[in-house]
Image (cartoon, helix red, strand yellow):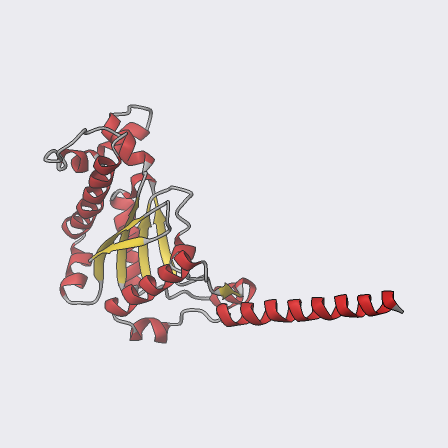
Length: 239
């Protein structure tokens, strides 16, 4: 009899515990199975998109990501796509771009290249995303502790990497006024060069793409920068 009572009490405790866990999860989790449509995309302004990405990053930092129904999103985007933004990110594996902004399949275009540099292929991709498909924002996303930036600072020479790092060199040159040790071991200096690299990439987009420059001048898109902190997950926006 005593054993039966103990079993009943244990079973009741487990039921209560499971119920509480499920309730808390439901309260803190957002579920999503819809995707971006042309109507939603076109109704957004560049400012709206920036706010969406800021709010998404806050959820990412807090560990409160939306539950994405990827199978349904795959089906719904199989015939078309209407992303809100084009994000130019570094190759770095510590920057999971969609998750950083709590976004799903079909929400953003992502171009990735070490050092988030600008070249003709990247520009063409941005022009396609904005002029052809209708994206409202270009975000150049740098990040802390960037290996490409450090390598440019150190003057690394290695195969095709050499040519890529030459595109980061202007950011190193424009950071010459930095007071302190100018080497890849100085975090403050690396952060300075990283910021400069993002700003110069934004300028390069405007100078090298008349299409995107005109769209920005007309208010059809915004071109902004951001810095992702690999130690916190926080994005600092540079508008």
